[in-house]
Image (cartoon, rainbow, N blue to C red; front, side, top):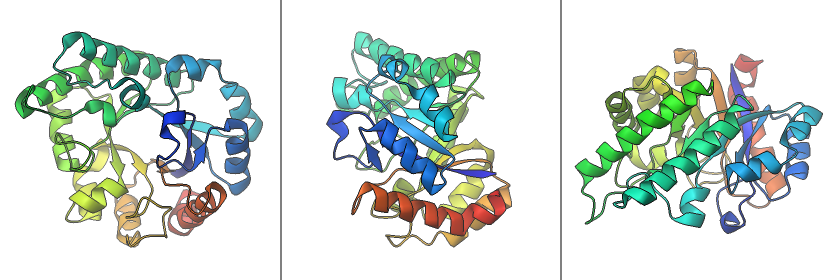
Length: 275
């Protein structure tokens, strides 16, 4: 079953970021439920912030689940990454992610590593950076397994990282890290930039894919760009893929409209097979 989710950011510094709903969690949950989403994906400033929210109450009230929790605030607010040349900074990054893994696991949800993977620089060459990232993913994957969940690693496009840009490169990294508890997050916006064929990349990655960011070529809601989603839906159906297709899109022209466009596209593509 492919389930629908929609992103909610509670990070003030991400006000201009690609999240459908911003800041008002109760209103976002109410809107998500009314439109028929199964879950929300949460982008919060920290694990402590997540635990201070009335999150369980809101999810229960609206019949929603938590699809995943992002860790990107560690980069956005604190400039932390897993391949920082400073060992102390790497440890801070790993602890920040570990805390969010534990907080998300309380809701049977995974944590996402995207921007916190970092990039290689003149101070840390690519081989070294990938080795540091692989080792961190192994430890964090073990942390997720012990918490009863998985960890999601997201390949990003070339303008956001110079480590892993494609699902194939992501699969190679997962093989190197050696943890069965780390899965790939396939973001269709990044894939539209980097993959020769999104559908074929998904087929090739297969069971390594644990989560999808359901969004169009321009980072707007699915259906507002130029991606042809039909072969993507066919590939997922061929794989008998189960997971969340989560709308991580700009709130354009506004949050409500972006959410409506997203759920309408999801229903057209996956609603029948996911009923």
